[in-house]
Length: 111
Image (cartoon, rainbow, N blue to C red):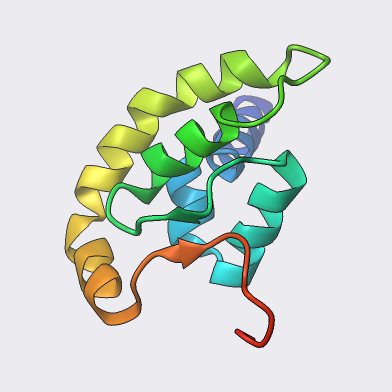
């Protein structure tokens, strides 16, 4: 593998790791909820349909990031999440019907 391919693969992997759709569709619900709690979002749950966009909006619906680094990444991720969420619709519609929303804050005894 050439250096250019390695850098491209590394950048693509890094970008997808922050993609709202990749985070919300490919991770376990508990991991998504933990990530959202770390962000201190005010959202209570995320719908599975267009969950990447919902994830990004929930990140924006949190106390401001003191470093100011997070906002540009989230704004860049919104269009990518919209496209990826549309591709994932058949799966996310099924999961929404079967499992409902992804809860961020569980009630005592829920798990």
